[in-house]
Image 1 (cartoon, rainbow, N blue to C red):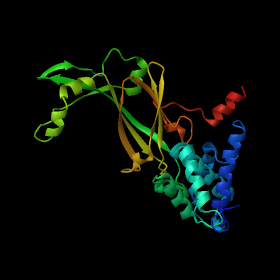
Image 2 (tube, one colour; image 1 turned 120 degrees about the horizontal axis):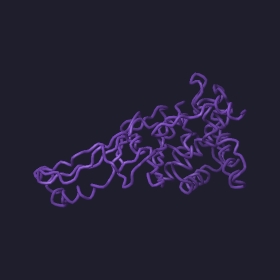
Image 3 (cartoon, rainbow, N blue to C red; image 1 turned 180 degrees about the vertical axis):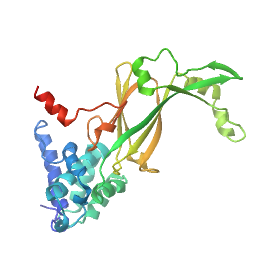
Image 4 (cartoon, rainbow, N blue to C red; image 1 turned 90 degrees about the horizontal axis):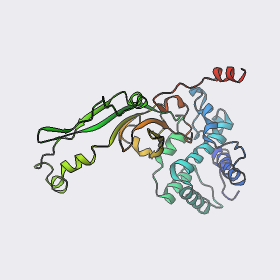
Length: 306
């Protein structure tokens, strides 16, 4: 009650922040205790609902529809994701405490909160505030396409090593994942155009250094409109897994789709986006590659009654 938020004008600045702090305190008190508001999965039914029945968080309280979800649950979830997935707990907590210190016994506006969080953390969060607080967009990031490449090396016009789509070392599951292994040629660099680069690197050695690597070109689609970091879990042929996080800035040039090449030493057999469901992605059906048929609610109901 030390910070005077105008609940009549911006209900979320009071109730949303309270719900967020309560969720953090609840998890600190008992990690197994169910959190009422703030968990990403719990906001999915609301954010994936009829768009005509939704209002941005930054709507005057007298014009809000679905008051509990809009002013309590969604801002609490947004701040939870900002803390756990975007900024990290340590940096978020530092900035949040700075906000409490700077605006103690004062009446801040939403812009004061947004500005303080950015100023104290030295992170540009405009994309986050705009998406979560000023729109009704939702998170739906899916894997559109995956292509597998290996390098073809040629030296003095003669083929030195070639890995083709018919490589007998690929097992059935790997072939199903990539369908085929494409080849590409690393063309020679003209010294007159990139003289400094050519003087520093031996292109033949560089080609040979990548000859055993796997290149995966992954096309991602942002179907929900809400920009978020992309968390990828890679599954390899040897049974191991690896988790990788791409920052939200990956969508800077194209917020609808992006294609990125990943270099992997091991053979990849599966990809899962947001494996721990920490971004409130409304459709997990397009989060896997190869696609896996998900059991419908009706099928689950039948299974539970057999």
